[in-house]
Length: 168
Image (cartoon, rainbow, N blue to C red):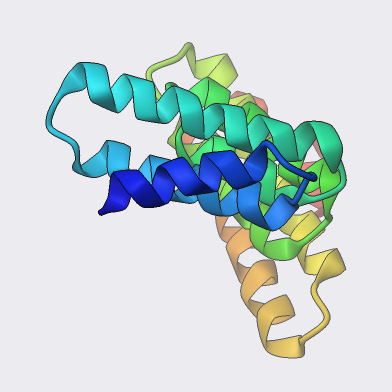
């Protein structure tokens, strides 16, 4: 069964360190938590998944996978953003940058100044993804997305217009 498999993964994780085993364990525990109906069991599985992902972050701080796993099971939007920031710092991958920009843009319900700042930061991150992207098709997509995000932010928050946003 799944629980036996989890037990074996946790036992294997206690042996010589393996990133792959820790990531597999974290992903499996997160999936079990999503499918389990009991709130207590869900919390327990999520905490074990967090421990597995944190082990990856601790042992391999330049491996974005641990940060991405923690972001996936984050308890709040702010926590998700922080783990995604870690993933971007670990590996400047355009896909990770796009995830961070999307998470920043989702953070609504704040003061208009904070929302404007987050939206402009999201646009700036997408602009950074354009810089790191190697394929021309994706570079085009990121440039259009950055322009759209800057335009929407300035339209929604005219006072948020900065010299850099105008230049872009």
